[in-house]
Image (tube, rainbow over all chains, first blue to last red; front, side, top):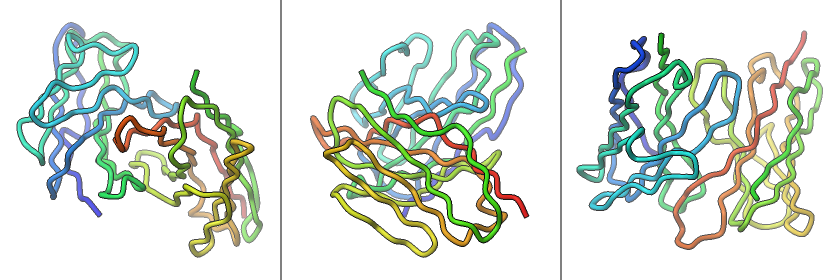
Length: 114
Length: 113
């Protein structure tokens, strides 16, 4: 199993500002995943963070809006840039087990943009 | 396109059995997973099926039919604490065994006394 520490757990931000979310894993992992979950909705993958290379973004998500860093095999950050109220959501980081059969999630960051 | 269909809501009483279905249409298929999420909490893993058949883990069982692109989660002896959202998720067949998941819209299960 993997233990994921994610912070901040919640924040209220002004529109136009940026917030950086941190994700720390207790073991080395090749890939880390960033999801968004809007209230009452499903999880949507934003991007896959690879150590040593640029993140891979899903359709509808761009690097300028959601820059990602992956400086080592246990840590990643997601920045939500130039925020608007539509960015209000829960952001979750995730890793998979070595067999890629089970995903582990951080507790999420509940972001409210006002 | 990619889609996973599951009922939006299910209600059952304590002690009962409930089945949550999931049909999927994805560009590839590597396995079907189920996750539970309580309000305000993180999703937690329940089960994974890569091959056809039934997997049983305590009160929870999961079934997969690859030929029908269909699976279900069966919850037995329901307890109040089972009230939560349940998501099916597909791991698409790689290009690499990436661990990337596509989630269904989730089923909200309400267990009543």
